[in-house]
Amino acid sequence: MVTKAKKQERVASLEGLMTRSQLAVVSDFTGLNVKDMTELRRRLQAVGGDYTIAKNTLVKKALQDSPILAEAAPLFKGPSGLILGFDDPVGPVKVLVDYQKEKKRDLGIRGGVLEGRRVSPADLQAIATLPSREEMIAKLMGSMQSPAQGVVVTLSGVARNLVQVLEAVRKQKEN
Figure 1 (spheres, helix red, strand yellow):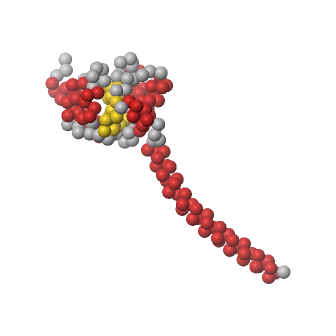
Figure 2 (cartoon, helix red, strand yellow):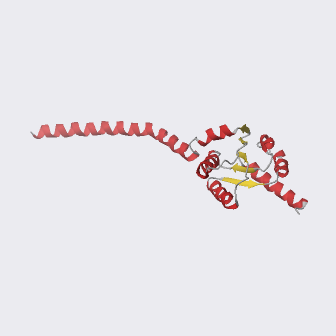
Figure 3 (cartoon, helix red, strand yellow):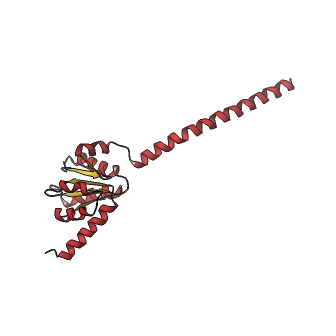
């Protein structure tokens, strides 16, 4: 039997997770065995996410103190798993969608909350197609580097032309 103290400890733990997260996705975990759940957890942890299962009443109690994720409360009906994203919200969604495709198993994604806004399963599918944070930073750095690289090429072209002209003048004077 779970004591009141254990329940309060679990609620506090959930509150801690939820206050750090930018993303919360609610899914159905029925049909997942321990091996599959462990694999999904590891994949999520690799991209800065987490997968947790708790009683809906405890999760709803924890959500009351989290204004960012309070929108997710109506999604907790029946067996519910909670996918949380801490650093990059796109990474955990991609892992979840890829996992479903790879295992050919529908995890029953009910929806979620992204930075305080409720998102539907269709929205989450669209988010999964976005590039990751690292890819976006790399593209941004590449586009920022491009103009500077153009300036360098142009200036080196001017210097190269000057050297060629001086070389031609030198050869002409030798003759």
